[in-house]
Image 1: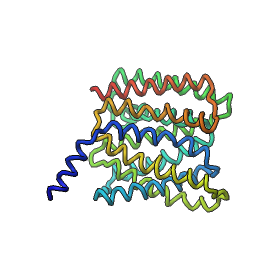
Image 2: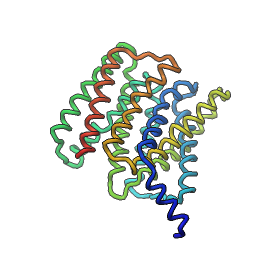
Image 3: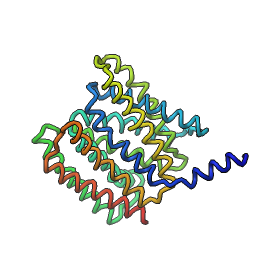
Image 4: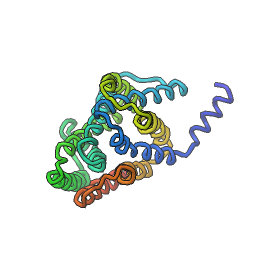
Length: 286
C-alpha cells in the first residue's frame, strides 16, 4: 500500500460518524413525502426507487472497491429488504405516512419475539416491558384506523416492521453483510417491479424528479451514509440519532403535503417511538 492510499484510509477512519448517521436518518425520513407526491402505484414506485438506489450504491461499491458477499444470511437479508421497501411503499398509499413509518419502527420488538420463538433466547425483563408498551401504542393506531379506514394500511405497515426485523436479525448473523444485503435486495426489487412503471401515465418533470430523489437520496445515499457513519459512531449515539426518521417523516408530509394526523395516532406514535428509542439506548449501553 502506498503512502497516499494509507493516508486516505486513515483520514476516512478519523471522520466523525454522527453527522453521517444524522444525514442518513434525514434522507430516510423523506420517504413518506416522496411516495405521497408520486402519482404512481406503490409497486411501480418501489421498482423505480430501488433500481435507482441500487445503481447509486453500486457506483459507491465500485469506487471503494467493496467486495459484495453472497451467502445465506446475505440472501435472506436481501429478501427481507425487498419485503421492507415494498410493504412500506404500499402502506404509505393506504394509511398516513406517520402510521406507516412508526409501525415499521416496531421492528426491534419483533426481533425479541423471533429470537424467543426460533432461537429460544429468553427475553429479559426490559424486553417484555418494551413489547407490552409498544403493542399498547400499536393498538391505539388500529383503534384510530377503524375510524379513519386505515386498518389495512396499518396492517401492511406492521408487516413491513416484521420484514425489517428480519433485516436486523440477518445483519447481526455471522458472515452477514448489511451493505451487500441492501444492494442485492434493492437490485432485485428494482428488476422485479420496474416493468410496472411503463403502465403509468404521468412522466412529468416534477414526478420524475421526485422519483429520482426517492431512489438516489432516500435509498442510495441514505444507506451509503449510514454504512459510513454507523462504524464511526458509538451505539448509544447512533440509537438516538436514528430516532429522527419516524419523527421527521410525518413532519415533512404535514408541511409539504398537508396530511393531518389524529390525536390518537400522535399518542400512539409518542408511545412507540419513545419506547423503542429508550430500549435501543439501553441495549447499546449494555
